[in-house]
Length: 261
Ligand code: SF4
Image (cartoon, rainbow, N blue to C red; front, side, top):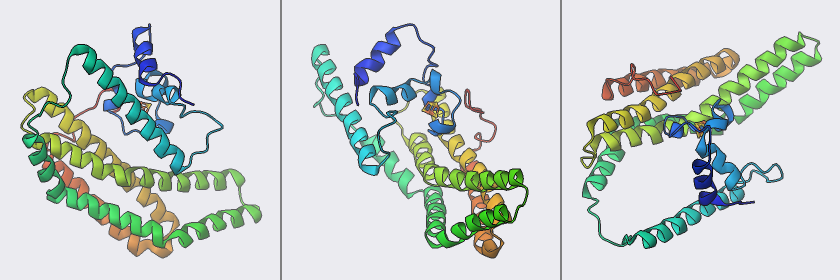
């Protein structure tokens, strides 16, 4: 259940705290695997909006309700603050640079490549449910036959981890590439240093996502020999995608995000 929402977060910021300023701008959003949860204001907002309640079921409806609640809360807060400061939120703003950059980013060949990767993975998961289930049955069979339990458990963990990594990044890669391109093309940014950091941070998250996914697909390749042709196709595509990202963002391989690289 929501506590104080955005106002609660502002209160936390005004008290002595251990937060790392803006750390959530550099991460891949996978909080369950992040070692900075107790130093991240964004993560602490989960408490303020009741995301961490153990009795909440993680259904899509609950998630959408929570997102809607956050947007409504922030929107109401901004209106109140704007009114207090005499800012007219209805004043027309020239968004042409933003809109042009958005169009260029969405129609860019690299964006299309990330969408193609998304489709390849989506199709694979849809059509290979059986193969994944068969592999899980295989693990159970080995356990029943008395094979080394520790070894089987480690194989299960490795297999599940590979699936989770692929599932986490296959949508995020596209989102982050669009964001990197959008920022790169948006002429309204005047601070070159800021633009450089924003572009390369987004591109780096996509690149790291591709590299981790590549390793994860290699793991699946070891387990799912009967599907090797399809997995090899995806591996080859991902490899090309990594090269394309490095070509489009020549500094990204060397660029290091604070805290995460
Ligand atoms: S920094 Fe870590 S805890 Fe914070 S939003 Fe990113 S992944 Fe989540």
